[in-house]
Amino acid sequence: MSAAQHAATSMADGDQDSSRPWSVEVRRTPAGAPDVTAAERLAADLRVGLAQDPPSIPPKWFYDDKGSLLFDEITRLEEYYPTRTEEAILRSSADEIAALSEAATLVELGAGYSRKTRLLLEALTSGGRELLYVPLDVAEEPLRDTAVRVVAAHPTVEVRALVADFEDDLRPLPGEGAPRLVAFLGSTIGNLLPDDRAAFLSRLCNAMDPGDALLLGADLVKDPGRLVAAYDDARGVTAAFNKNVVDVLARELGADLDPDDFDHVAVWNADAERIEMRLRARRDLTVRIDALDLDWSLPAGSEVLTETSHKFRVEGVQAELRAAGLTPVRTWTDEADDFSLTLARREA
Image 1 (spheres, rainbow, N blue to C red):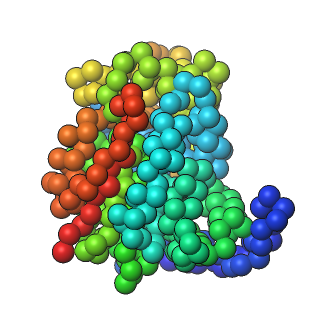
Image 2: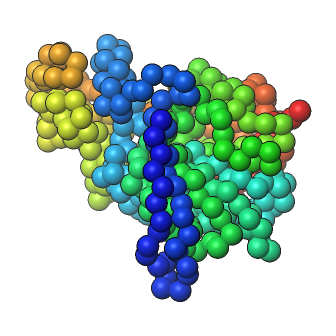
């Protein structure tokens, strides 16, 4: 494990002091495990994924610096309702969330650029209260951007960012000794298959202390046409985001791959109640992947699964939280029941 200390040197909006220190800690492996590079982890994930039927690539590898920027652009698209809907729910409920959680530490999993988090930060620091903010993500650059913006805008917030994978053992969570609020927003929980989701929630519960709370965002089942459009926008931003993982494999693993050899595909799987994003080969491909010492064949028309995005029902979300050892406290939804936020607590 390595850590680097940084001081923010820019000014946000020209009138806030951003000279206070912030930190970015690289925690790429579980505590106590041998040091493994990101490229080695990608290689291990890809070796497993390519052996599946259909072959798959875990969606966390979308999020290099370019992928994070593309996803940030996706969240602003007209078709992509989840971000603005979740933000509207947060705007109306953040004060209540802060009061119910009584949190002195906010841990955000899969934080990215943390655009929506300002609403929670404002509520949790109301009246000049101090707060430790711990954004966690696999991509480092968004965390640096977030740290600069947050310390500039919130004089009572300390930022301790973690470059890490939320699917690892999260212990120890920073902020021991005071109530924590762990935020997992954007329905990222939907990217996990049901068994993986159950294991993740149990692991997260075990990392939390009694009295800590989880705020979980979950996209709800709705008209399939709206769902597909959200993952296949007219401008092609989601297609570029999907194909960016090809560039990641080429750069990190020496894979002889070209994004132009693939089409972006998004479909609704009604039986599993999930959106599936895929890359469909435009021609017969034989791909050399140096890091795996592997020659991989992909016939024209065959597909690689790059993301599953499960959609939920409120009662199902609450049942999964209970099964993991967390007690639902309250769920908020928008008027159209498009999206939900559920606050759950780890009891003694």
